[in-house]
Image (cartoon, rainbow, N blue to C red; front, side, top):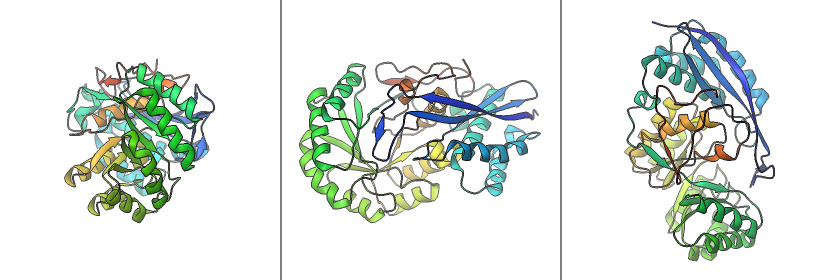
Length: 355
């Protein structure tokens, strides 16, 4: 049995191609994440990515400190014991889901490479060889958003997500302009990022409905579960939880109380692939749809999430694992999107490595 001989953390700084990229809670000109690198005594490498955006997960220094605290205990252990390792990680440090997710990803990647199998085999096996992708249209003027949306549709994306601001008049105009620009064949979803109250969303949707909206992601504050449930019961459109689904326990409650129609699942948000798989099982058991949403990061993060998404039985809405394409200085091998879809990479592990 091979053992881990080194566990290190490496910086992964990336600027966005559009430094004014904005959603309702923040402008994101740059990502400062971290890569966990595990090496075994046969020289095989396992990689994981720790997400670090202050408005979403944590500041980079906090993630780095958590990893520096946790990683030394991995040396001498076997990736085959990843369940026990992650149990010890959880016991040693509370919260820190992004750091824990990176360790979990790296252990899975290393174990898959040791076994010579693709990562999805460790998650039960792929049910899809390719996964269709949606792209995000950040907050700008209605005309600018329409131009951006038309360009993405021209690249083959058949589902687009419009970031909204909570200004109903502007948001209605944004939806109208984008729909006019992309035509009737492109599916539109909306993401206000918690910027509405429930009744405000109902009123705004009455003015947006004519533009054929497929889904609304987290329109109300994360703690407003009653508001989410009201919208799910009231509006003739799928309502999705994102920021309200930070843990597996959150997912269980959302499903058991049927608060929403769809849950946005993210490996980094949930603390790793094992928790992600548990959340998927809960959703599938309760007949609530899953969607693998956007977590900005390099091709490494997207490839890992792609393997997880490929193991979900039904994906009624396109996933969001192609946002790495507008990040600069990606240190990993390419993960291309062809005609709006990503094919599972060949080879052992997650399928990407340092370029």
